[in-house]
Length: 330
Image (cartoon, rainbow, N blue to C red; front, top):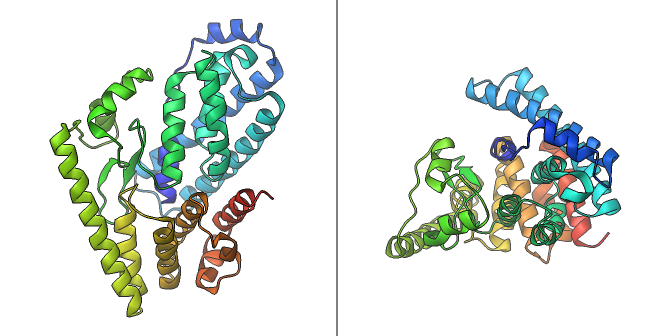
């Protein structure tokens, strides 16, 4: 899950020429904030280029990869905290406030704030208002809208978010709502790349289905998810946490079909299996449950069922506790 999330962080901004940036900088309302935002883009992209290159070379088990991952996470945290401060001071960084380039960069930094999904959700209506006022880029809203849905375990709408099934290795899009109309929605938001070309660039094939094919695909997914959940629950009954965890993982690959309770049950099975490779995924499942309004989220901090997660991934656990606090209005 950690690898998937960081891979999904890398996106290409719709950039203006450097000369245009200089011209904009002279006219914006908040030039210092504009410069700060733009400066943060350099490290964001540089670290992601390095990260992806190491993955492409199969270096995930190296000390260099671990160190780079920690540096990237620290950079994201710092950028997210700074974006919170900026939003509190000036609202969404619009074209007139910071310039087009910095405004697009602000979106990029928010898009990479996956460890603080509540903040991403809070930014969404601010960005929408800016888009409606022609003060922000419509495609940015589409990407963030899908990102927020994904953080909740829901279907996406514009097909901006690819995913890797960590169990099977399958690459595809996060489940898309109303698939037959997805290309038209992308075009309406100014996303120039076709969905098929976008899929190809991500390493898999995709064609927009007709209505009949989409309906069949939906029924097949519902049955598949129900089968996985049934197997997972049966494994829990006999105490086979590893088997339960694997089936919950299979089911969770299909966004839009699990309840908040399913995500908690899956996280519990992964934690009780005490498999460290599941730990980050389990914590993100608890985040999804909290974002979806799971009534027992306050118990995450003390439940012995999740004790393994607290020690296996302390930084991710801190992110979860911060999210629970935000959900509680603390």
